[in-house]
Length: 297
Image 1 (cartoon, rainbow, N blue to C red):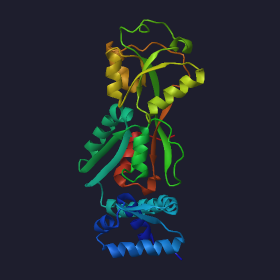
Image 2: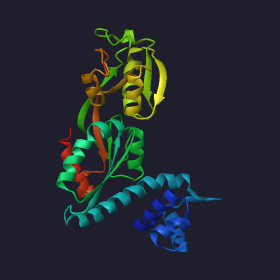
Image 3: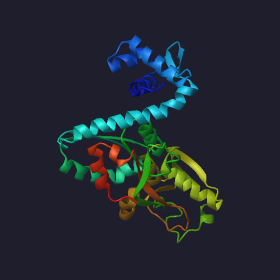
Image 4: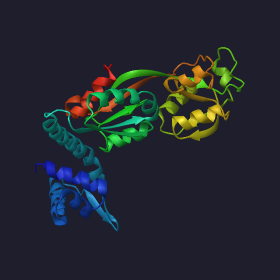
């Protein structure tokens, strides 16, 4: 039996809400109509897709396996609708993106300023988190594009990754730190160093930890904080050293608030990347934003 795209869209809504009545309300349908769509989809697949519990419904393993394909159908249909609407230009619209903390703080404001100057009628919606947070938003369909600073891992077939800029991590310490006046450091000199870390899921943390592990150097974790600004303030107050994006600390280093001793540690360079559906499936608002980011690699 052929799969009905509308039934797949209903499955996406039910999976997100976990409740047939809530899904029916969002779809402007009756609950029996939603139940019948799920029933027909179940018959087409040949396996149960939902199981009931006291608070609603959840996906079965077969439903979990079908969901990414249903989300891909939803994205494609949304892309077709957006294309039809965007033919009228960018006098109205929404730029719905997510960015990791480093990119949101260091690069995004300048790009958004250019964008807003060109398209003042477009509403800017920017969500922020670490790399894993913003990828999760993209995979859930809560944004059109994710800007990340770490590994994207294995992506669904309907998403692509491209590099738009490059960055380097720097070891930074307070001026009063023992390493502040040191000459070029070797990895061995970092043994036992107390570090302030970003939270798990951070691209900055992932790159720095991987670089240290490759050398076999054992450091000491002093504190874990969420967000770049919290880590930066902790280092300034003397709680420990940290690996941070050069983009984030360049002003503080130039002002002498932080010190970045030279360090011969391979693996601290990284790509900054865009993850999204193929360009032709993006809204025109997001396509123009990608253009402002610069050429991909």
